[in-house]
Length: 118
Image (cartoon, rainbow, N blue to C red; front, side):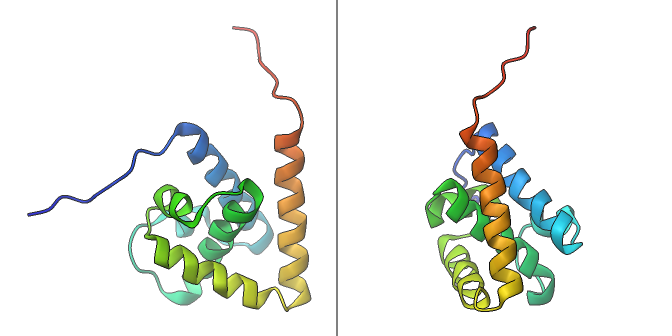
């Protein structure tokens, strides 16, 4: 029997994905736990996760494969999610949301990191 193949995910990647998940949750009313489950989801319930995966892809410049590793899905699933979001960006509300959140993330990560004293 083959065991699940998993690529180690760094803590920094988990933090970044968590930020994308929580930003999407804050703006859509979805629950973060809804976006972190493994396996196939109801498409309606999966849409917030698709938005978070897309946001991670564009805001962090992650490859589809890297997004898949962090979110626990395969590259093809991430690609399908990103294609769905790209199509949905024709709606102004989705496009505005993604632009706002991408800018928010980039603003956070462009400023210098604060090292707190021990």
